Image (tube, rainbow, N blue to C red; front, top):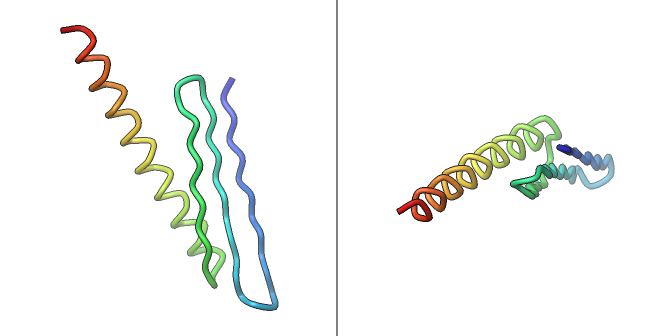
Length: 70
């Protein structure tokens, strides 16, 4: 099973919006979060961060598998 949770917390009073992105798969368990004044910018930033984290985790896993095969 694979799970993706995106939690949006918008605030009108302080202009402090937050977004949390959770990705859970059999191989990865990653969380990315960010806060900022503009909700769409915050969403873009958290998705970009999650994308980079996923690429890094995949590269680490591939490296670990190569080291184990030697």
